[in-house]
Amino acid sequence: MRDKLISGRQVINAILDNKELFKFPEDIQRFAVIIEDLPSMDKLRGEWIDYRPYNIPLFDCSICGYHVKKMSNFCPNCGVRMKGIENE
Ligand SMILES: [Zn+2]
Image (spheres, rainbow, N blue to C red):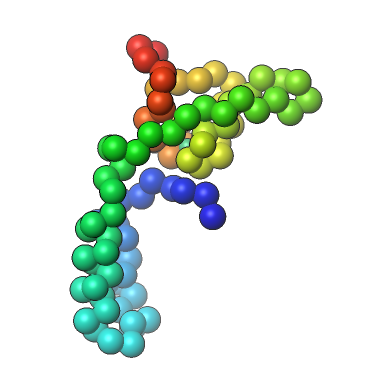
């Protein structure tokens, strides 16, 4: 599975919306603590990977795999900030 930047709050809300899937109610609280402790997406950095199908220059987001023709500061698909790209 490719990484995808999502809101921790939305994950917790999705869990709360599906409480019936949890056998023990205390497991919901345990998951909430685990999600809260995950690294923040504002610290996550991706990079553009040079990807040349049929010799056409394309760049691949290292986080989500989205292809772009031109590198930019952020991936237009997952929103991650890219390493080494300044002043775009
Ligand atoms: Zn991406």
